[in-house]
Image 1 (cartoon, rainbow, N blue to C red):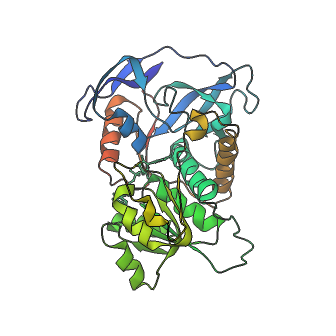
Image 2: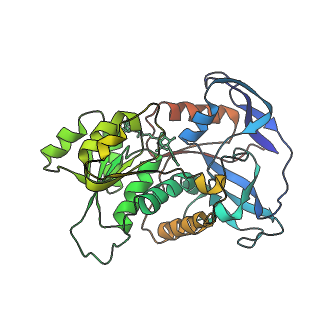
Length: 343
Ligand SMILES: NC(=O)c1ccc[n+]([C@@H]2O[C@H](COP(=O)([O-])OP(=O)(O)OC[C@H]3O[C@@H](n4cnc5c(N)ncnc54)[C@H](OP(=O)(O)O)[C@@H]3O)[C@@H](O)[C@H]2O)c1
């Protein structure tokens, strides 16, 4: 099968950083599905895993953790899908990725493809939707009570609103909860994108978020979902979070921060890693199957829309190097997808 892979970890402008290769097609065991991959998206995790380091892989390593495709065969213990089903998934960081014509994935982290979207529109969604869903509902525990509004609306600050995760988080928060959504963006393109997805207010993460919110008479926010540069935003988050409020970050720290800054306010801080369930095969791993099916329903009923912004074709090393370079720029708006294999 065709695949894009690496052996050495090189800067993305090096043509050897990602290579077109031929690999054996794997066979499904246990609860695995063998998927014929039709489109993939690129996430910052791809560039972080590929980041230059002094290491050579003994065998080709396939990256890519976002895909849409069709079930070709199933393992003996698989029960959730059958041959021919169209599905979408992010997969496991501990296994070969989706930048290959065929891929094995555990059915418990796979959802049915939304029927109303194209393959490229679908490939934009799984990894970021899982992250946003788990962050908002499992970690921050924001109530899904759009229908029964019983108390004054709370406020959610999403730092990094126009990126892949922010683009779906804004929509989920607006469609499924009563919170007022404040998103951050720093350029006219990303500001307009956040507004088009439903953000109630957009502020600039490159200026003082505290001053901008206080100018709007917003002293504190109930929830903060940090989707970019946790180190940079730590002090502002500690200042802006309401007493007894909740902060969730999805971005690793590069150094130590002062956790004591949250103590007087009894603020909770939580991490979200969307690979946790598959990495540790947690008892509730199948929640990602349910969650992705719920996303498909929300898309098919028109509640949320794809976050696709740009498509490259076909899926090959050249286009993946272009996509990695775009992600590394830190200025991606929505999602970047690669579709189809050359014949
Ligand atoms: N823990 C997890 O499970 C998980 C899952 C997914 C992603 N992540 C991580 O979360 C981060 C975001 O992922 P993503 O897919 O949303 O990335 P992305 O699409 O590449 O994000 C691009 C956006 O980041 C914004 N941005 C750039 N610098 C910023 C800053 N200093 N503060 C706030 N926003 C800034 C940009 O907005 P402007 O152009 O307007 O400045 C741009 O729209 C990455 O570090 C990724 O590895 C973690």
